[in-house]
Image (cartoon, rainbow, N blue to C red; front, side, top):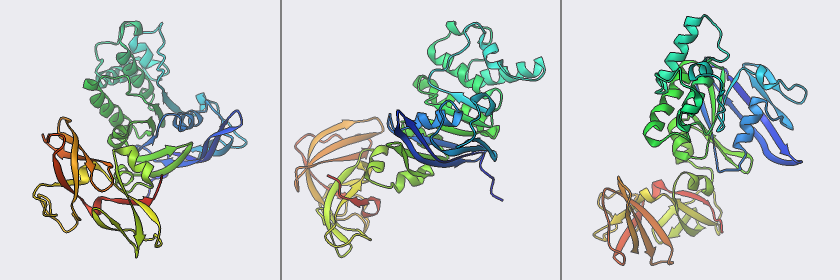
Amino acid sequence: MSQPPRLEVDAIRCQFDGRDVVRDVSFAVKPGDILCLLGPSGCGKSTVLRTIAGIERQAAGRIVADGQVLSDGMLHLPPERRGIGLIFQDFALFPHLSVGQNVAFGLSGSRSEVRERVNALLARVDLKDYADKSPHMLSGGEQQRVALARAMAPRPRIMLMDEPFSGLDNRLRDGIRDETLEILKEDGTAVVLVTHEPEEAMRMADQIALMRGGKIVQVGAPYNVYNAPCDRAAAAFFSDINVVTGTVRGALTTTPFGEFLAPGYPDGSVVDIVFRPQHVKIDFDRNGRGPNPTPLDGVPARGVVRRARFMGHESLVEFLMDFDDSILRATVPGVFLPKPGKPLWLTVRRDRCFVFPHRD
């Protein structure tokens, strides 16, 4: 039997000074699931979070938690009555309380139960020896971890997180992030997390809601959102892309890399063939088959190396293509640094391409 949603956001619209900043946003989150609101700055992500929390009031739509309406056209529960945990970028610890007292703030139960919960959470955010310290003695990253522990301590049914790991250094970020989300999943908390980093969303989310211009343009599991983007901009948000333009004839588009299927587009339509740098193959012997040939490799096209950079686990090579002087990027595993001016032949996997209406 399918589990009912812990949180339902139904067609909310938010306005500032009479202008829509969030329009028709809907999603649902089950207990223990993590939904990431992903998008560029200014797209409305944080406004959605603040509206769920009750800090802002929507102009239309409703918000429901465990079947209880939190806000709609008639009702607006204040934040303190919603049973929702909040972690915003401004984590605002109580300066007159110790770290342990900050985490314990608002907890019920015996003194030993509260102490056990506080110590367990501080240990999981790598601050087990900091309970008696004052917040002003901590670095910004340490204060942020205390705020994470404090928000999780009362086991809220819903947790709202706005860029909660942005202040942590790279050495700690992955571990603290994984520990935090593991605790929330164990407690059955429904999490809505805001980020503008696609890699972070892919790592953390059960579902990604991609936002643009105040609206959700695509929602789905990370694998699906990445591998079946709804449009060219969605594909470009997750990684660099290459674009080749062609005209449809008989559901096929002819390009310098061969013919690509364009089902559903009428003859004469101009379309963009979009593919990621990792799906470009270098055809070293110019036979059109590449180093590990497949029937999907297509036709080789010639380009001249413009720049090559080693990126750690891969190399990024930029080519000036013969067919239209466009720049095409390819990523190659390992160290591959051909000199500028070297001509090479490239192929593109047909099954790794997206076809979208042409955009100038």
